[in-house]
Length: 101
Image 1 (tube, rainbow, N blue to C red):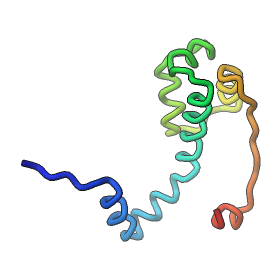
Image 2: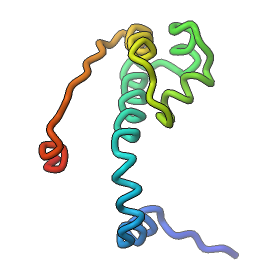
Image 3: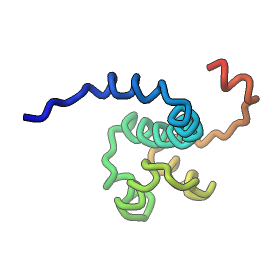
């Protein structure tokens, strides 16, 4: 029988590896964008299918947005905001402000 390691323990172990930490930290913007898409959709209690219909696209396209593997265009961000009844805001932060949290 296979034993499973809780994800928190595995993540704590991986965080000891400086290469993993550098790669993980490099994905911070993608994680933040994916989280923002998912949170906006959840806040208005919409399914991926409902957002896709409101955007005039497919559920697969919404899944790709929420995966945030590619940076979407401003037009796509605006369509998502309109579909979810939210307002798109883009801002710039100093690198030092980001590191502080």
